Length: 155
Image 1 (cartoon, rainbow, N blue to C red):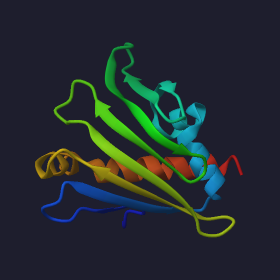
Image 2: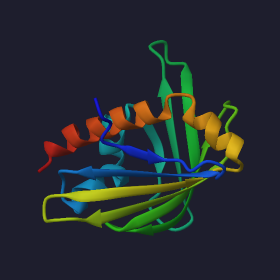
Image 3: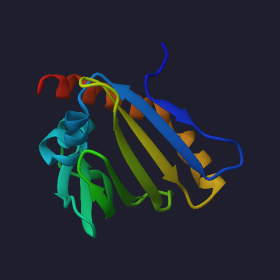
């Protein structure tokens, strides 16, 4: 089965470009990334903080059944333009991956379809390659499929 979320990783570069077209108006696609209640549903994680503004910060946590935190990520929002784009840093706690810089661009294709383009820059080619080897593409595709399903209900 072909993945709808496409990841382009050029050899020798420390970046990746991710694209996905959604059967959602751009306003709803952006809302899926900006509203904590929606983010929690499709990402399957708790939104501890999400300050959608320049110099804002964000923090997500996932806990196991016993309440132990098993995943934590955070960063700073550097740019936030509603329904168009945002730029943030991304750092996973207690993980061997360094901080990355992420650019999210939201594009209206038609009144009912939109495109997300994510450009992610890593500290090194090795760091980028390490991320790609852990099933990143499959996990992101599954998350985007959930996003489509959950946000479809908001139409």
